[in-house]
Length: 98
Image (tube, rainbow, N blue to C red):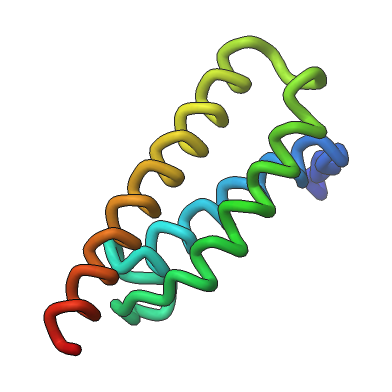
């Protein structure tokens, strides 16, 4: 007997996308390895991803339950804070090396 596969809803796909992009943002902040095992910092890519997550969150926050909304909000806030910290560190390095 063949097992029937459940189809993902659009909301489920968006949440999966949010999770995938947030993982890549952590990697581009230089704080974790990416899915390819690469470990480097690219703050422009990290910022693009964070901005995209912010837009997604603002669009979907009314469609998810409170727990998911709080989790997404927490991920986004933590990414923004870490981006700011990494950006400040990179500016200090540039000043030091100039």
